[in-house]
Image 1 (cartoon, rainbow, N blue to C red):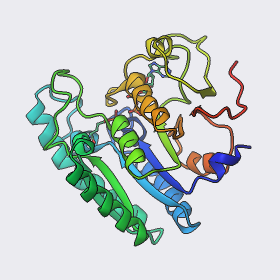
Image 2: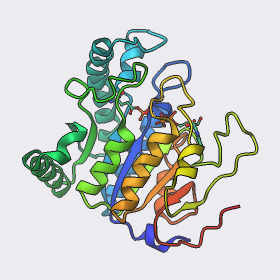
Image 3: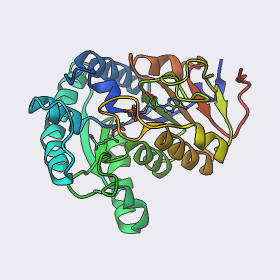
Image 4: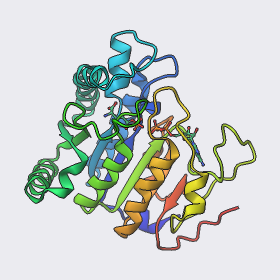
Length: 273
Ligand SMILES: Nc1ncnc2c1ncn2[C@@H]1O[C@H](COP(=O)(O)OP(=O)(O)O)[C@@H](O)[C@H]1O
Ligand SMILES: N[C@@H](CCC(=O)OP(=O)(O)O)C(=O)O
């Protein structure tokens, strides 16, 4: 039983496209409902919850019945703008059924470089939390195209979620993906790969073990999750990477169950194989 995780009061949850969109491209409504249920339950318990969500492009592609992302950045931006509105609409409906208000916050990752922007963002998020409203954050894909060099990639909410966790002094970042945690190699390519239960430091050897995205819609792959974890460790914060196929796993994590990979400088007694 993990007591320090159990005590986490302010929790940032990041959910990736692979957990929100089925492999066939349709929106996974069950998953969104389970997410809304879990976060609303935590909020009612008195925890402070912030959601960082991907999925704008995935939902936009579904609306247009497109089977893969266009390569041009403006097309991806347009699809993100289309999908974001629908994504928020779905969240708003599902959270409402648990009597929980939500608000949309669209950010760019460079907010931390501009003190005024940083303060404005912090003030908004803190006020929403005070009002018991769950901020639902995504990257502002219309403004930010930081990954333009990589024609197949767009956005990186892993890093954004670590920035948000830092900005809000969160006790815990829960990063949900389509895999049980960080393995010694990509399990899709290497069935003997072992799950790391705790990582206390990100070094070059670990970075080399992190491969690309596994799903058609995911962007960052494991490397971007490790970079986010690095930021978290630098800030002396904690992150758990876990499988978001059923987002109710969030409740088990916060209850202190040993799930996924814990990134924390403090030894938690989790044993790696
Ligand atoms: N060492 C590793 N451990 C776990 N997963 C890995 C590793 N290397 C590459 N991956 C791949 O990273 C994928 C998760 O990244 P991604 O598809 O971007 O997810 P998300 O959409 O949740 O952000 C996994 O499905 C897996 O195929
Ligand atoms: N802003 C983009 C984020 C893309 C992104 O980071 O996706 P993922 O790798 O699934 O977390 C979107 O909502 O589609």
